[in-house]
Image 1 (cartoon, rainbow, N blue to C red):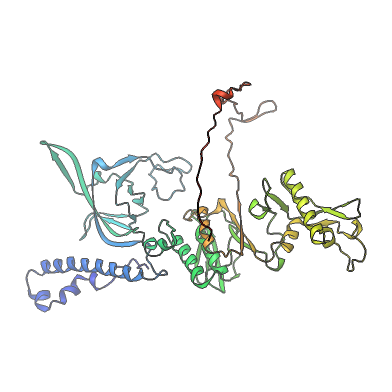
Image 2: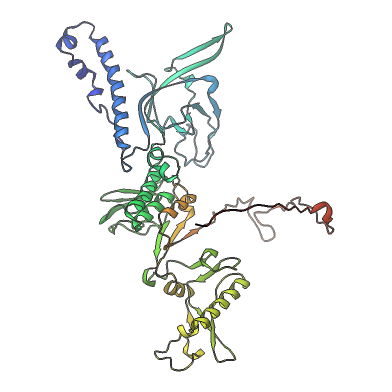
Length: 515
C-alpha cells in the first residue's frame, strides 16, 4: 500500500487548522500564537508518523496489501566530511539518467565529474526530497536530479559541504578542528524492513530483496498452495522472476505503443506496461489483450495439450537426462522441421525406422536400441505405429511408411501432449528489476509432480564493435589484431605414481530403519 505524494495529505499537515482546534483564544487572541502553532505542528508530525506506522501494520496483515517498504516522514541524516567518499560514477554512459551531466557534457563522451557519496541507513531505498530544515527550507534537493540512493549511500552531484545554504559545524579535539559535520532532513523516505519476508516469505523459506516482483512471486506460490496450481499462478511466478509483465486483466485494448531511452511502453485502457528497450512486440495498437497474454516475446508459454501447438514457435526441443532413461551421457535434440524417414529391413522380415536426431553418437545409438527393444517387447514396433495404411493386414514395409517426419511434432503428439509445457525466455531482454532466473527453483512448490515444465533460455550474443585503425586498401586492412601467448603448464611424458598418486580408504557405518 502506498500514499500519493500530496501536500497537505491530511489535517495533520495544516497548522492553522490544528491551532483552531484549541479555540479562538489561542488562535486569535493570544500574543504568542506562533509558539503554540509550532508546538502543535511538532506534535502533529509525531502523530502523522504514528498513523503511517499503524497503516503499515494493518496492511501487513494481508499478503496482497503488505507494504513493500516502510515509510518515514522525516529522518535527520547527520554526516561528517571525513565520511564523504569522493568517487567516480559507477556507470559512464550518457544514457544513465541518474547522473546529471555537467555543462560541458557531450553525447558519447564519458563523464569526468566526481560524485560525493554520503553514508545513509542501509535500509533506505528511496527518498524523493532532501531539505536543509523542516520549516521554511531554503535548500531543496530532488531525487534523480541532485542525488540518488544506492547500496547504503546517497550519491550527490555536488559536495554538500561546499553548499552555502547548508550549515556546517566544526568538530574540535585537542584544541584544533579535526572534522566537520552537517545534517540534512530526508522527507518521506522508504525503508526496506523486509516486511514481505517477515510476514509471509519466511513460511516458504524464500528470502529475497523486497520488491513488487518478490511480493508477486510469494503470492503466486501461496495461491498454488491454497487454491491448487493454475496456469495463472505459474505465469505470475515466471513474470516476477523475469520482471516481464503479462496482461493484467481481460479485454484490455492497446491504445499506444512508444519507446524512450529507458523502456518500451505499451499503454492500454487499463494499465501501462514497460519492457526493456529492444523487446519484440507480440501486439499492436487496437489489439485486445486477455489475462496472462504475453505482450513481448521475452517470456512465452507453450502448452502441448492434446498435441496441438504452433509449429513455428520453437526451432527444436532438447530433451535432457532428466527425461531420459539411465545411461545417457548428454541431451538429445529433436528439430522442428521435416526430415527424411529411413526404413531398415531386418533378416526376419521386420522393419526398423530411423530419423535424424541430435546428440552424441553413443546416446543416439542407445536411444534407437531402447526404442527397438521396447517395440518388440510390447508387440508393436515404431514402424508399425507409423504405418500409413488404414488396414495393416500385411507386414509393414518401407512403402507403407511416410517419406518424412517432424521429430519435434512427433515428440509433442506422442509423448508430451498430456502433462508438459515449455517456458521460453530470452535472457538478454530480462528486466533489470527481475528476481533472477535462479529463483525458478521456487516453482517446484507450485508445479504438481505429474506436470513437467521445460524452461528454454535463449542466449543472444552481444555485438562487439570494431574500431578501425584507419581506411583499408587492397593490401592492408583497416583493422589488425595481435596474437599473444598464454603461459600454461608444460607437458610431461613421465608420471611417478608413487609421488603423485595417493589412495586412502575410509569406512562408514550406515544404519537406519525403513518406514
